[in-house]
Every structure is written in structure tokens, then in C-alpha cells.
Amino acid sequence: MKTEFAPSLLAADFSQLKKELQLIEKADYLHLDVMDGVYVPNISFGSGIIKAIREQTELKFDTHLMITKPERYIKDFAESGSDILTVHLEATDHIHRVIQMIKNEGLKAGVSLNPATSLNTLEYILPELDQVLIMSVNPGFGGQSYIPQMTAKISKLKKIIEENNYQCKIEVDGGIKAHNLEKIVKAGADIIVAGSAIFGAEDPAQALAEMRGIASNV
Ligand SMILES: O=C(CO)[C@@H](O)[C@H](O)COP(=O)(O)O
Image (cartoon, rainbow, N blue to C red; front, side, top):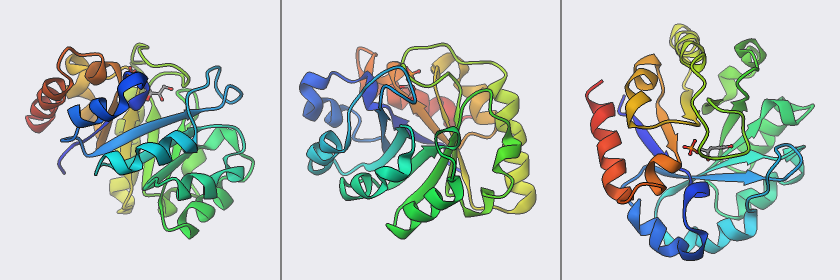
């Protein structure tokens, strides 16, 4: 399967979002990191900003909710124009219910796991998921270093998905750059989130093209 790319808006220049979006128009998704300052120690943006940029790009919106009790805001984020909504398993007491809420809005549903959370927690929900987002840094900030143990976690999840014939993609997020991309794709990542490696580059379009080139040779 072709590796897909989701540049993270968190690393973009917020003072010129329209221009930044044009630079990554050849991506597959726009990754939108929503942080509430409670679930993670940082505040980013909410559904108002997502709604405001919805008309500025054709990219699919891959919204990653790093918020506590996401069930309170599923409708809001569905109405803002998100195509995929990913919530953290650790942020709710009722993950199965939240997945159903996302699907009832007609969106694709993802669940994210923090680096220390075991894959065992997915056992009874994996058949329902469109994607699992493996956090390869502790969530909250861009520009951190990739946690090496996450490569084995990705491979293990890939094996479970293939053995059971689940239709679930693996998205990996945090510290991904050109130098470590190959091993992450080899391990089984289907979607790569990259913030600083793309928006932090002098030429984001070229950085994206280079990363695609690396992934396509795996
Ligand atoms: O969700 C997060 C951080 O919480 C990520 O999406 C980062 O924003 C990725 O940034 P880089 O590590 O690629 O700079």
C-alpha cells in the first residue's frame, strides 16, 4: 500500500495559514492537533479554526483530539469539517461509545495510544477502527525526538491487523524525519504525520516530496 502523508498544522506559521496550506497541497491529509491544556500540557486550536480553514484546501482533515472526555465535542468537530476523528484511548472512560459517536456522524474513527499504552488495550475495539494513531512522542508538543521502542510497537500492530484481516490503517506521529522514515514505513506505518520536518523546512513542498520518495522505495 502506498504510504500517505499528513503534515501537522501545529508546526505551520499560524499568521499565514492560507499560504502554508498551499505549500502542502500535494499531501494526502492535513493533520490537525487539537490540545486542551488539560489532557496535554499545551493549548493549540479548536473547531473554530478548523471550520475557518475548511474552505481553503481540498485536503482531507485528519483531526487528532488531545482533549479530555472527547465525547463532549464529537459533534462540534464533525460539523467543523473533519473527515477523520481520532481520540485518545486514555482520555475517556468509554472509548467504545466514543467510536460509535464518531461513526454515527459519518466520519472515519481513529484511536490514539500514548507511547506507554499497550496494544492489548485495542483488543475489543480494533475491528471497529479505521485507523490507530501510534504516538511516537509524548503528546503535547511538536519538535520532539522519536521514541525508538515505537518501531517494535508498529510492527506488532501490523502483524495483528494482517493476521485478522482488519481494515485498519496505522498512522504514526511524532519525531518523524527523512533520516528515520524508512524504518517506520518498513515496520508497517500507512500514514506518516510530520510537523517540523515539513513546515519547518525551507521548502515544505520539497520536504514532502523527498519524504514521499524515501517511502516509495521501501
Ligand atoms: O501530536 C503531535 C504532538 O502532540 C504531533 O502531531 C506533532 O505535532 C508532530 O510534530 P513533529 O514531531 O513532527 O515536529
